[in-house]
Length: 420
Ligand SMILES: Cc1ncc(COP(=O)(O)O)c(C=O)c1O
Image 1 (tube, rainbow, N blue to C red):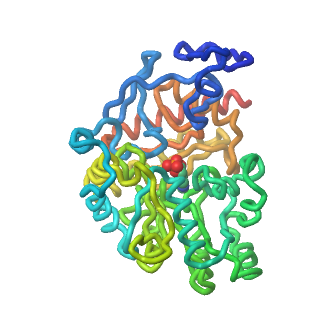
Image 2: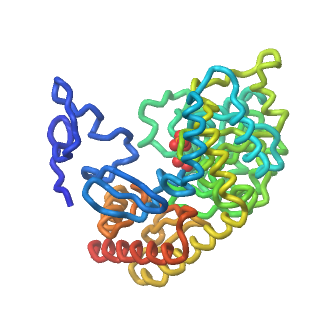
């Protein structure tokens, strides 16, 4: 492992680090995005193929990070590469519509039969921003109800449920318009909405909140949110940026819930930048430019043919049979890890093809513990996200799932020994 050494201007033991004329690393902290951070200089990815990734330290890994769950078909799937190259060779992106937008729209909307229309964005963050704007525009109200630990990207509104450590730099007015309530607290949900039903534009739910340690959201909570939203004319937004992979009709389908708007991203771009807000026709009319006074929706690269073509290929390659197969592999991983880590004080949570080991009884895992588990997993050739969220990909089979589970269990056991 690389020893950590920090100077005034950042980490110095990263061989790739480049500095500007005034001594600063060109990337703050040495990272192109803060979400890479695992407590010490990171390895660099060199190549990926299927479920494997190789790094610049000469190591081969099972890739269960999958670029933060987005690579549902692993690395460089030939059909996705072919689709993306076909679009790229034809010109990459244009300022008039392209046919691949319709193709991805059709692939996606077939899975969301209670919704009518979709608009594409470049990220899940933008999709949630658009959904909230549509909710506010259509209701004429400002307030948004969220759950503690729900993650909805990095817009000002979305940072509020993360609590005070995330809201530095977010204007007071934005914070005041967001009401966070405890997860699964049905009484708090009723109390918040019924105190000012006409103030709420939207209730937004992340049904498998990674920031809360993949805590399960109860049916009662979800259905109460649906019922309250319908009763008070509030827009129910289900944020499926991660969770769409968990069911052919997304995690909403698994709960039997019909959102008014649904946001997604990640898997529907085949590994390229993407987001989407899908919704009922009456609401999506808010962004219909043929109507007077419609809400703005743009984005130079929204709906670009490379993301659209790769995404359509990714969805075609993920029929219900594959959803179920991956979810079953997730069960194999969870039960095998559970059996091996019994007595360590750790547990394994998740649903379907999303898996996470956390200390028992802990929802918000501290950074130091997350980083320890990340590096113990790394040493065993297993890549997760820095929060140790693991996702499966379709190139994996039962043997890979069992291998992955062994590596994860070994890493958890190593971390728990070090905690003694
Ligand atoms: C539920 C949820 N919403 C929104 C986002 C933001 O998506 P993006 O990172 O593409 O902006 C994420 C990202 O992990 C997410 O998990």
